[in-house]
Image (cartoon, rainbow, N blue to C red; front, side, top):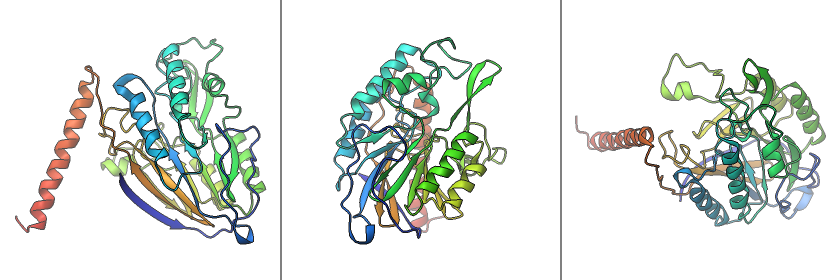
Length: 353
């Protein structure tokens, strides 16, 4: 198991009893409450941020996800819960409804093998037909968010809960609008949910807080790839209302926002809020690691009012389908780049010109 680690500390005291604040229970099973210590604090506990699973039968993705779940179950100490980060199914935007149905079924069946509760978060591929490339009519009774929420018995798409003196907020960044080709979405939290968030955080005052969204507030793809033409406010990779969201997070001294969507692990700190993007459980949609990271997830440890995180990579080897020629080429390019970097490293350490 390969580990990378980022530690950080922020200074807010913990307080309050562990209780669900966001209405109906969202988890499959109730999160285990860590034992409480003196002065209202709790003993350290951990949880997993697991995002971009993209469950599918293609490329043996379901088998890969099962190995991911086995890896989480083997963690010691045992995590208190798993916080999903969205894109749990391979795709509801562009695939046929019966395929999406099977992907949701596999996600739930395999996720139920976890030894701890798990909480859902809405991703852009978890909605049915919100695209001009939809495979269902807009009149389908399961259109939009309804299908996955019904199948998962998921009552609210955004909500909050408490564990061990910490407050957790799950956000829904799929803001549905009417487009020129019918219903679609914008990647934004939206004013109604932002107002809910502000008052939810107000009610949780005194508890250190972590929030999660699928589409990232901050994503540095342009800088990573050295592309001067890439827009920082790219319409698909970041929230369109990051400024409005971050001001709420900053005002309430939220510790961190956990993110997904880009399939690239990153972290960025601004005004004492950490924006942490986890690696994708599926890496590059179960087609290798050519996006820049092996398949993995993030383990977060909470201790009093401090926390730390580490990436865990569980060692799944891609099993491509016969038609995956583009993916084979991208994996070959990545392997060649890695080999060249190793050659240069050895040359430079030896002092050879």
